[in-house]
Structure formats: structure tokens, C-alpha cells
Image (tube, rainbow, N blue to C red):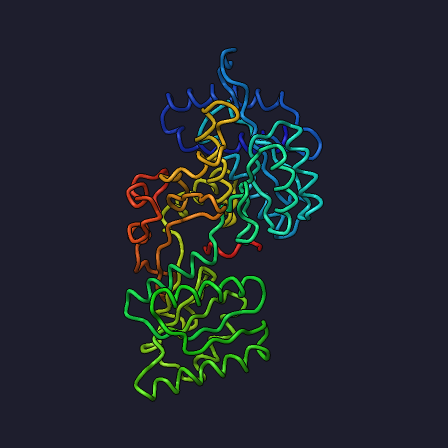
Length: 439
């Protein structure tokens, strides 16, 4: 039995375990299981390819449309962290197929080796296999080559990169973008009367994107940036720029015009080092609100008292909790956080699959103002290749985070969201860190 068959079989077995309380449910499931397993046993993947097609229990009538082929490009090679993430994303795509139970949609998964050359090769194979939509790749550096190949065949790309520069011209970014997170947090701070900001931002491409978005959002909102420094990872390298920012914060507090918010877009690798420095500098976090991005959402951040009460953005947690529980019951492991994007991309493809070939995945359909239901809430793809997703605001607690700004309210506050807040209430799933996808 192939990997896909085992995955589908695991899913069905999980359902059987939940349904066997009644003999009738068990009997129905047994019949469905037999038909699904037999279908997959007769489907042998080609080398380098894993099929994720939903088992077709009843025969498909001859007047049905030809299958809609969707290709997913992921770095599946090896056993490292990225390969494990890719495996979880592949499984999430298969789960979306299983949930929809649409035999007219076929998912083919290609290993792109995590490289630009490998992604180009995988994209060419996908197009020769008849793919009408490409989902992936994971890394921004691989997107331009894939996009050029896909564009020549008029096939759109739903990438998992969060590098805004690679979006557009047929490429749509499924990930949470750092710019959107920054705008959500600055807007929330301004709504709470925070107008004077200081910031300590990491160096690199991610930090560049964050700084640009931060300066723009504060300026548009009528706020002021009192101090801003960039830092490199490592306690010794952080010390000097951090000290300069903390000195400005403390001096401002003594003048009666305090810094209202200290923006720290760090993560589990940098915050444990910054925390003791903030405490040593005796920053009064009751006066100066600590603010971060989704990188703050990691286990045990509340162990450092200085971050308790800090704010950070993220999707409504209820949808992810339900999704991860179902994923764990199906595959026996916790999903990587980006699995929700893979699930959403395949669900989107299934949603549009009923339209005639050549009209399914047009820009007009992909950028429908009403958007699409997703694991983390409704989302909308935009013509420039970016996406709009609903973000809640959390406050760090000693254990976990507490929602203090509702995601649906964020949708209502943003006219460009197209009234998605009502969809938020009616989405497929109700409301771990989203984290930053590889740029």
C-alpha cells in the first residue's frame, strides 16, 4: 500500500474508532473502508510522486468531468525539520481531499528538494501531468522559477512563502505576511492610546520587511517612532543596540512623555536573551507596553515574567485546535503549524473545481471578494498576490495566551476585508505559533 493509501486508511481507521459505538455506523464505515482501500491499492504512484486522491467508492459516471489535477510542491527529501514540515503539509492536503469527498479532484505531490532547480523540475513534471493549479513551493527563492514555468501554461501558483516580493503576476501567497501582522499590532496599539513607539528589530530580510511595514503603519496612524535599532542574533551582539533603545525608553519615562510601546518582533531564539536585558534595564512594562509578532506564540514564553502582559497577533486559536486534533487522530502526530495553509490551499482548489476547465482558477475566481473558508478563519487572495487573513490579538499569560482583540473585529475594522467577519462566524472551522514561513 502506498503512502497515500496508508494515510487514507489511517483516516478511515480513526473515523471507525470514533463511530464503532453503534453497530450501524460500524457497518457503514466497513463498507466505505473496503471500497476506499481497494481503490488506492490499484493506484500506483509514479517515482517521485505521491497521489492524494480521495477514494472513489461508487463508480464515477461517464458524464462526469475529467479529473481536476492539483499539484503540490514540497521539500520532502530527507528526515530533517523541513522534511517533517513538508510531510505534515502533504498530509493536510490529503485530509482536505478526504473531508471534501470529491473524486473529481486529484492531488499529486512532487518533491522539489527544497531548491530552486528542484522546484522548477517539479513544476515541469506537474504541468506535464496536467496540473491546473500549483500549490507551493515552500521557499521564496524557489518561487520565481516555478512562476515562470507555470505562467507559460497559464497555471496559477499558491505559494507558502511569506516573501511579499515574490507574489503577484499569477503567484498568490497563502502564508501570514509579516506586513499584515505589523499593521494589525500597530493599529491595535493606536486604538489603545499607544502613540509613541520604540523598536528593536532583527537584521535580515524578515527584519527589513518588518521595519518598512512598522514605519509605514506608525506614520499612517499618526504615531511617532522615538527610537529604532536593528540587532543580530547572539547575546553579545544584541547587547549594544538593546542598551541604546532601553536608555531612550528610560529617559523618556523621566521626562513625562514615556514611550507607550516597545516593539520586539523576536521569537523563541531571541526573546529568552532579550528578556533578562529588559529586566536588567528596569523597563517599566506597566507604562511601556511590550509588543511582538506571531513569533511570540511559543510554549513557555510566560516563564519570563517580563513578557507576561505583552501583546502579539495570531489567528483565532479555536479553528487550529479542532484541526490539529483531527489531524492527530488521523495521522498519529501533531501537525506543523503551516499544515493549515496546505489544507486551505487544497480546499480552495476543491471549492473552484466545479467550474469548467480553463475558468476554474482565473484571477477573478481566486480573488473573489467574499474570500474562502479556512482553518484559521476566512481569507481573501488579492490581485497583487498578497492575502488578507483575520488576526486576533493575544496577551501573554503565565501559561498560554489570552485573546484581547477579536479577529472578527479586525475584519470589521478593515473595509478591504469585504465583510469577512460574518464569514468568520460561519466558517468551516471555528477560530502554537503561526510563525514566519521561510522567506
